[in-house]
Image (cartoon, rainbow, N blue to C red; front, side, top):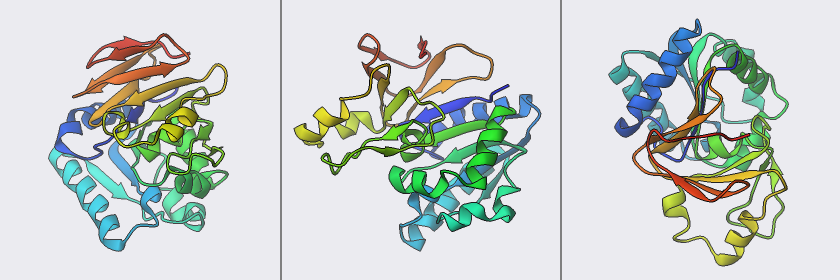
Length: 239
């Protein structure tokens, strides 16, 4: 029994995303998990301490508003992902949330670690798993290089190998160079490329065979299926 899975364009822990995050926590509780969520800030691990404190405090404020417990795990390096003091806190939580930052650094920090193993195991046993921005990108088999378009994609965590996400989509294509856009849109055969706008998510609930859009803006199907735009509460089947 896999838990719910959310791919979020932006906005983790903001008031606009509280309804989504509440629903993911509730999904995990229905699957027998505790009403807590885990904050995994690894994608921002190379940022300043003040920024890391910002993510910690933002998540805590959201938890307080929702009336649940948050657990901020200071996993900032690959070495931290082998720390069983952190790993052992994850398995019974209703929501595991990987927030934004550098998706390549996030993948390199988690691939082949006990931390990723327990995240995957927990999701498979009913915990909800959410990835925002970098946290959504990293769940595919490959992560494109937005800023260095001549670089090859780097390996992702491969949880949803045939789905590739462009977060912040409504803002992103305002500044991305044409050369990078062309490479970004070149995806392998049988890969579905989706753009997820800010303050918006696409969610697959535990037991469902479809995904549903949640949030203020749109999800854009760009490659692998007929081009389309989906708004709040619209559904789509992603093979």
